[in-house]
Length: 327
Image (cartoon, rainbow, N blue to C red; front, side, top):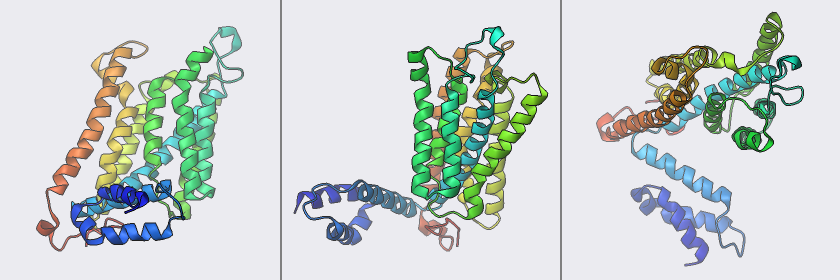
């Protein structure tokens, strides 16, 4: 046995035991036949393909094959939401307070956040016009730019968007990486169209006000409202698909609980520790930790409860491994 074959066999552990016994040799043999001569390690693409295949087979064996299609639906709603927020905050960055007020700024912009929001708008464009692989790379770039804002702001002693703005954007972007490879034109255009509408609406509203904008207005009203709309969209999707015994919408709704919870953190923390004209940092931190724990826990508990229903107990109602629709 070669070292390459041994390493492929290790990756094959991602599959259920029964599946490995029946088809493991065939799978590894196919990868070995396609490998370049002299290769000692599986390529990153092969490793990712094996891990994805193993996850799909384990979900299928547990009777929850519709989880992955449901997460893909949630990814679409997440990218639309992230694009809308990027459009709103991109306009916000273009309208800082007057210089005479002495409010810290970064050149003609409110903060360093303008770089991250430009990255998210670029991701919306890439989703609309570029192949799925390029779109995911662009989303990953936007995520890196967003994560880099806090340390870079400290190094440069420059203002940045608040963490209660950045954290939900990261959660939405991470979920957006699960966008399906093959999408209709309408789906591909949805994030970009939503971002353009958000840019136009925010520019109009800022013009009606004093001509400048700031992140503070998001604290108790805007962000929680966006989170609520995200959950409503997920609930409507779940109800509509459930009418045809399609469980994808239910999985999408449960998956969206975490990013929607992060969007609602300011309102939740204010409900815990009411303050005047702002929010308590301690309450924000505690609420963020609770959401980060409770959201994934609900998803895992739902998954665990569903896997207890083996395929034999749901005879005649198997889920399609591709779309998740119940037969």
